[in-house]
Image (cartoon, rainbow, N blue to C red; front, top):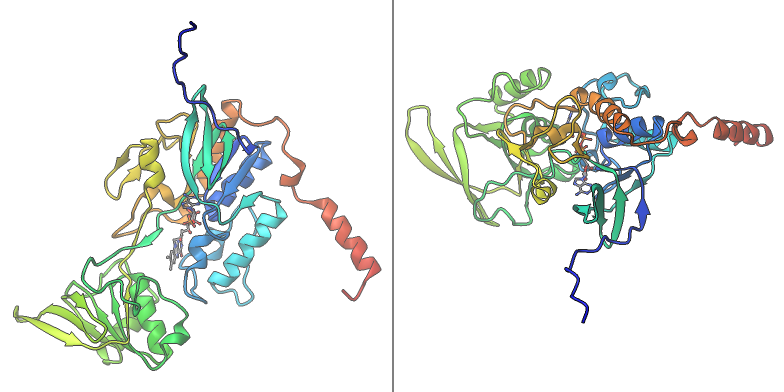
Length: 376
Ligand SMILES: Cc1cc2nc3c(=O)[nH]c(=O)nc-3n(C[C@H](O)[C@H](O)[C@H](O)COP(=O)(O)OP(=O)(O)OC[C@H]3O[C@@H](n4cnc5c(N)ncnc54)[C@H](O)[C@@H]3O)c2cc1C
């Protein structure tokens, strides 16, 4: 009788094969894919939500803190009609235009659930997206760092009137709103909700707002609103429980005494920062370091200890809990570093794909259409 073969895992039948899978369709994932495609590397983007998912969940009309030239990608200028910093809506429009211009293949609403080496060929990677498998020579984890709002871990946090995100400001008109937090998101939300006619209370656990980390244009306004009592500030306070009827807060008074407050609010916004989803790092065994569980990688190439697995964008900062260090504006070089390293390792064609260049054929088609339908 023939001896039984060892039960080696078989590779998955891929639904798609490409050079590189970029996980994450945020600005840096898109910029990285464009840089690769310009250099003849067949890169595709797989995104768990819509294009620019992180920016899409900002409250309507939220503006970037960074100026437009610092958040523009792939060399495409970002301009706004009023020369102001781009709003959420303007930036999402810009992202769609950039993706269309360079014909970047983006699979939206497709979460990458697993990444593993091909059993018979460890330098090839198999990426599971729902029930499909994509096979590639390299994977870039451009997954950002703001997947989940941080939690207070107190009773009542999951009640329907408690939210970790600021939504459409209009909804809060005429309502009593407690905002928990004291950094940019909380301060900006307090100012915006005050302006739409909400009755705002701010609860912050320190004795005053941070002196250095609040944007310089928010600071005078929030200070003025607190001084004039247009916004009530409860410094040195912590929320301990939330029920549908009331919020319990413990506060230390300036004279050192503690007291408990029971207050009613229609809405409670816990704007205390965001946490990175580390599922893929853990699953791949990528080492992480403090603070914030930053994925360990080579700064010159952005490659992790796993050959062919790279990190890019704000994902490299891990969970940034206090002062943010990694922004979109200091991540643009990740795209060029990874592309250079891939080319040095023989990944990619020598000639860039036509689609990655400015699409002159569609310009010609448009010109023809204008000639035929001048009014369209
Ligand atoms: C209110 C607010 C204001 C901000 N303002 C600024 C600012 O002014 N300047 C600045 O530089 N930064 C700002 N930031 C941070 C900003 O969000 C980032 O700089 C920017 O989005 C980073 O781009 P990125 O491509 O690195 O990551 P992201 O834009 O976060 O993109 C990561 C993407 O990966 C996707 N993803 C994650 N896991 C998976 C998976 N398993 N499978 C598939 N897809 C996955 C996510 O859905 C997401 O779309 C702000 C953030 C907030 C919340």
